[in-house]
Image 1 (tube, rainbow, N blue to C red):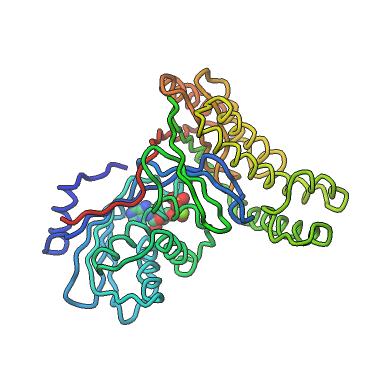
Image 2: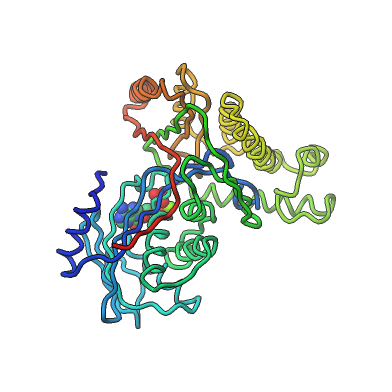
Length: 388
Ligand code: ADP
Ligand code: MG
């Protein structure tokens, strides 16, 4: 998706709304380096914001209406603040409707505004274009309304918008990293209490996303089953381990001691979650010491665990990881996201990124008949805004 430059966007805004924009906001998508299926177990994640973003230009209106225009969907959607619901004909606008609605629930007084939206986060590819959209709109609304809002509160507000208004039961990671990410770093986040720390990424490698372009409908129902298995395991272990609230509170040795009390399926699911949390903690330490190769190994281990223990991979994702592993510049690769399709995240030596792209693309097309989409990402800054 091409992104219009600032001047073109401003011209477009003025043409759409017959008055100029007053604020310009950008908010990034993200990639998760380690920590898959850990968020809903009160666990740890380790994402980075990427150099693909949603842009919003905005200005106040004199009335009580919100007029939004999507450049990428070539569509407008407008509503009156006194009474609005979702717009089934322009589903992209539901994210901003949700954000406005959540601000109001928190007692902020929202006035009319014009919004122009465009972006280049691939949609539905697992790079979280939806969180980038929510965060960009939330920041535009904040600046126009001259509100103070803690960054963590903004992330929570955006998550609530997606859950309550759009109806997607998302975790907090995507919104959190889009607000709080910093250039050149990954963000370690404890999903239980939202404490976090930023870790510089200094190694000479690039983060490469390979989109398998398969999306199994199985995804949602299997996701719910895994979540249920995790919760059930906690209930089964509680009589033995006492005060545990989530798999986050269980160590591997405790799981192993109690293996006989669990079905094979429950044991394996828990094994993934607990070992994945450990991998995140280890990964943070390795990144701090710039230990590139061992950090890459954790990605491979994560994939094995997602494939064999959590059982959420598929033929295409395994193929992408195998093809990546066969390239000389690859340090690590794993599936990311809910599973059964979607993307892999790869760590590739900078010098070798080009041959990596060519070879993985060729190999994947040969075996599946389709070309993967491949995106190179740079760890980038969380949301920023400036007055125009
Ligand atoms: P993702 O994994 O990219 O977050 P989602 O299905 O959660 O996928 O969110 C994608 C939705 O976010 C799109 O269908 C659209 O409604 C909205 N969206 C994403 N990018 C844009 C954009 N550039 N302009 C308008 N809406 C967008
Ligand atoms: Mg999303």
